Image (tube, rainbow, N blue to C red):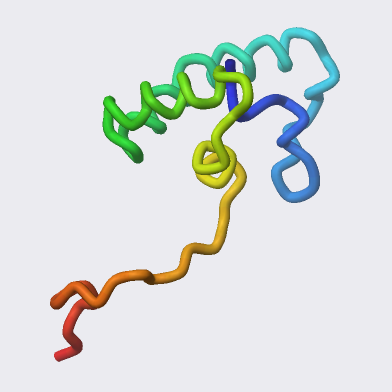
Length: 87
């Protein structure tokens, strides 16, 4: 299951001749190859696996939907040193 599909590439992300099967197939091959690598680099392997399992579950927990689609998170801690000091 890919998060990115050819339908993502519209507007400024348009890929020329995407309607042609060889271009579409090449794009799908690249998505299938590089998407897992990028997600693992961004999330780490364990969170990546949890993320995929969470999206495959029924019903999907809200935290996985928020991670996939984006959400605004509010700071709920006063942990010292949480914010970087300005110099």
